[in-house]
Image (cartoon, rainbow, N blue to C red; front, side, top):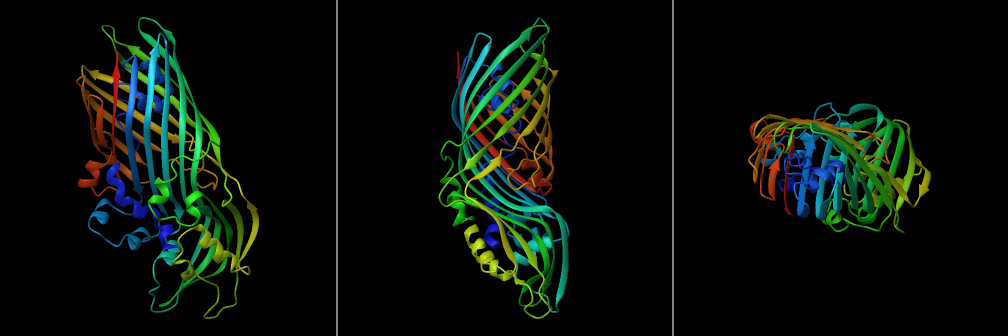
Length: 452
């Protein structure tokens, strides 16, 4: 169980590869495919007639307990993560933008894009429950901790690929104003999935020098897995070997943008855009799939061996190992539902942004992301609310920006990024990670080019 619960902790050490996805560059003055991925209406604003994206990657790791210095200094992450009374939230979110093309034709913009997603999360996990499962018992005398959580505590991971077909058009324009609209249809290729959710949990954890035992407990438990995650949940190759599965889902993005144009020359004084992304779902299918719900009821008479020994979960490798333990205790766990196909909802979000020209070459971008699903639902891929303000200097082929944001998990962050021609590199948290022990680490990079 330690390997499963601390999945995201172990992956935090690869955070130097990337972050909050492409913060700053998705609202760049040089409009390209990443702008269109954030809002499909932006394909009407392409800087070049033809745009080619070679590759881009963004990795974002955030949590509400472990600081950047804890990872660098090699502190005891397990103890730090489950310390205190606050529930644990931990997120790894990676987006890999694969080759894509876009072009403009008269008042239209078109694009064909491809992406892969890797997400892993710990959501609303009770610190005391996580500590009892992951860390060794060390109480000199018997200590009882009562837990009452009406939410749904989850450990979740999802991998999928997508192929997008976008169209955008200038809807209206006069001397001072312009409005564009756009739509993207995405074909989804689910790869691997795993979910363990514990809802409406109540129970007593009895801790002694040698063991942690759960008693007087009730709740609802969901176990679901597909692809590589049944046998293993902690090997990094489990995530990279199944970026694209078979076609089995569809989703839609749509958006609009308004521009208040410059009185002289090209460009705009103000651009405001809004989009809704990832409206849709996908289904994981496979002979080895499992989606089962269990009711938990433990009420043993008091005694030295009363209740469930949580140490049984210490050495599990995957969710099938957990299910074997559940099935070995029919007196505690009752299977209520068992099905093969797993249908999950995409992380639908609403994006709103405004780019304001302050003076020549200097502008400020305001960006907000609001999730539209409930992260505690077992069939929901997670998303997180965020807000950022990004001053930027644009010198044509060179652009530099300073994203300052707030993430609902990790709090306030500040980073830096730049674009030189078609190459870009940045992080939305490197400044606060180094100077203020941020609980977020991320970076992104990529290359694209345009012509004509």
